[in-house]
Length: 256
Ligand code: NAI
Image 1: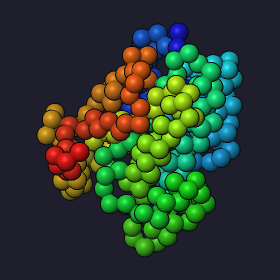
Image 2 (image 1 turned 60 degrees about the vertical axis):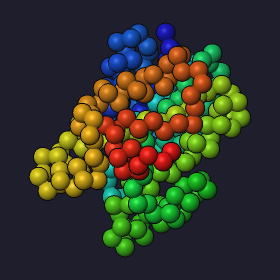
Image 3 (image 1 turned 120 degrees about the vertical axis):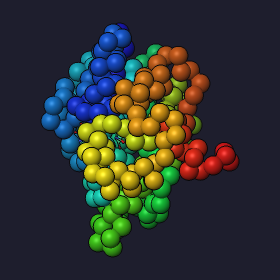
Image 4 (image 1 turned 45 degrees about the vertical axis):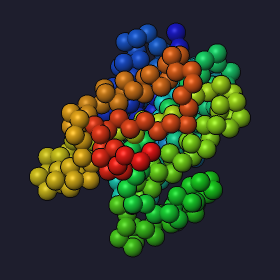
């Protein structure tokens, strides 16, 4: 059986993915803050390092796939710490294990939010791999009343990192496809409570129009991630796949 590590395994998309992978016979190592095989806070270097070590231990040194689902949508610097550095550091830490597997795969969860207005200084610091500067800039954004830009910034930076990293010797050269699924609005514990508030629902619906089938269930996103990390995916890499009911096509228009 394939061994797959999934972060954010306790809730929403990650939880749905764990259930799907286990049902198809894979061995899953779940990583999350409180309830998981590996309990780690991915906003800290200590947590990331320990997560890498414990995943390696539990997998007995073998890992066929990694899916980074853990994320937070708060208008707070922690969004940058978890959604960008928590993902990138974990993937980089687990990459040597993946490289030793026969058909390794990696995937992350982006967001339609990555196409919204961003804080370029936060993104630049992320892509320079300077977490301290990114968090400082993020704190400044919050103080300036632009904390709402941090979640989009974290997801945009992640997508840009992925497009660069995927085609390098470390990933493509090592035979590891690396892709993202970018959802629109998903009915998980992250987003569902927002939609109960009429005014907030209106804001969300205007920001993320989903003409095809509306809000997605977590399992829909899990299914797309499942294909990206399956052995059937031999040639797709560096892609951000919008599984968003048509939001990205609606918002960005026909140009590709
Ligand atoms: P969720 O809130 O249900 O699950 C997120 C999981 O990540 C939770 O189990 C949480 O404990 C874990 N997590 C958060 N911070 C962590 C940390 N510091 N260390 C370890 N684990 C941590 O949310 P959902 O919707 O399943 O989100 C999964 C991914 O999908 C996230 O990256 C999110 O940004 C993304 N996404 C979600 C959308 C939505 O509408 N729900 C839309 C677009 C993207």
